[in-house]
Length: 170
Image (cartoon, rainbow, N blue to C red; front, side):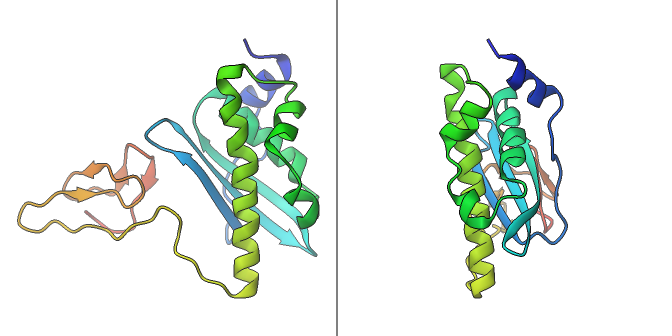
């Protein structure tokens, strides 16, 4: 089902982690369907000096994240903008047809991280994608995760559905 390159990047993913104080962050996916990908960038002299990822999902999504970071590291911003979903799938020497959607996540997350970097550099402040106001418990009203809208229990500090830490107690 999976070729050797995909299996290698799944079993031995490269560039896993979070960059403290990243210059750009891109997040794509849907926690309810199981694939979430976050790309973190550190830019120096208009080049991707460091790139890390956190992915929650299937083996293909993890392999795509790993390969994407290998492709993008060291590239200029303009070069990285040209990386396509097909480039990632080709570098992995193909993915099963039912997993091709995972390759879409990689380039999309990279492009979102670059956009975030360019916005920050230009002084443009945008609300965090997908983040909603936190609903407070009032007279027995339900509280929902600000990232994925799953109902939370009283006092929750972590959303099991999207695996995200919650900044405020619920």
